[in-house]
Every structure is written in C-alpha cells, then in structure tokens.
Length: 258
Image (cartoon, rainbow, N blue to C red):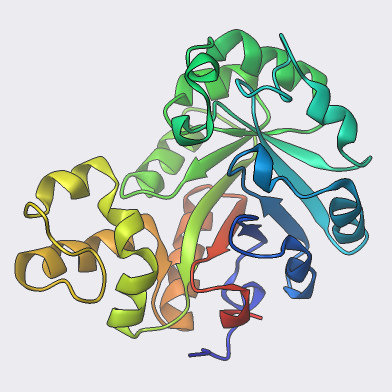
C-alpha cells in the first residue's frame, strides 16, 4: 500500500537501509540526500563497487561497530581499507547479535575514542553508551524513544550545540495492521514495552486485547508511524526540540516511500 508521500515530503533528511534485506543500490531512488547503511554482519557488507556507485548519487554513511574485526581501531581494521573515498562512518559499539563472543567482550570506550579521532565528521551511535558518545563528540546518533523529545530539550538547555541525528523506523500509513506488521516486533523488543506485554503475546497485526493496546502506543513511542501529516508533525516537534536530522528506516520497504 503506497501513501503517495515520500521521506523528504514529511521532513526526513536521510534514509537508513538494511543490506540483509534489500539491495542498497536501490536507495539511490529515494528523495533524500543521505543514505545510512546499517551493519548486519560482515557477510552483508556491500562491496566496494556498490558503495562507490551509490556514493555517486548520495552522501553515504556506513555503520561500523568499533569492536568488530575489520573495524577495530585497536586491532584488525582491515575493512576500512576497502571503503571507497568519501564514505562517511556511523561509529557504534555494535549489537551483540552481530559480534562474536570475543568481539563483544572488547572495551568500547578506548575503541570509540580512537575511531572518532581517525574518522572525518563521524556520527556516533548513543544507544547504551550515551555519556561515552557525548565525550567523543561528533554528531550524536540517537534511536527514537519515548524520552527523545525531553532528552533533546535537556541537551540543548544544558548548552550542547553539537549536531544530533535521530533514527526511527518509519511507516507512512494510518493502517494500524500495516503499522503493527512493520514495527510491532521492533517496539516489543524495547525494555519498557517487553515488561508491559502479556507473556507470549503476538506482536504483529494479530495482537489483541491488552497486547494490542500496549503495541499501539509503543509503535508511536519508538517509530515514526501514521499518515504523512501525523509523521510530519512528529518530525517538526523533534526538530523544534533540538534534532538536526531525522534518519528514517522504511520499515515496509523502499517501494513504500519511493
């Protein structure tokens, strides 16, 4: 189901794509200037030619987990040599699901600091390491949550004048079943939502009763969902609170916003 709206039309500045589920070269058709490529394991890293071709059309940033072999600034950083010139980086600690046990045990702080010193204009993922991310500088790259607006205001009131980008799965439709199918499971993985859900509850459009009530609110806390006007209003409020860029992940596929 297409909405007729595109990412840029609702105020989204950059698009995130997942190479495990889509050919990232298709992101060249999106009407945003910047593409951020998520990390889903070394086997899913786009090759040099794919990144080069996309970079001819868009500004491209690649998520690089600083604890992972190939991107470890204090160890094996060989993957960096394979990146085309001009590819920007999103520095993250790295999700354990995409790291070996040895990688996950590595200290984040010294690696994040070293990677930030070596990178040009990095974005720094804040998930779980907010204070570390602030300490190393760069554009703060936050996941949307129920606390984001208040956090943005607090940072700006405290005098933080650096750039802040907010990442959110995005679903441009007011069809509740479509929303839950696209981002219900994502929202259900967040701690407060997981605690509020009944045991063994469905987390997609088949959710009923208390589970559906919880998920209906949760997807609005952790994702940008709804008709284009509703999403545009939410983005405007985030930017008024202090966000500089909104990075949307098209949770129903590139064709839904292309």
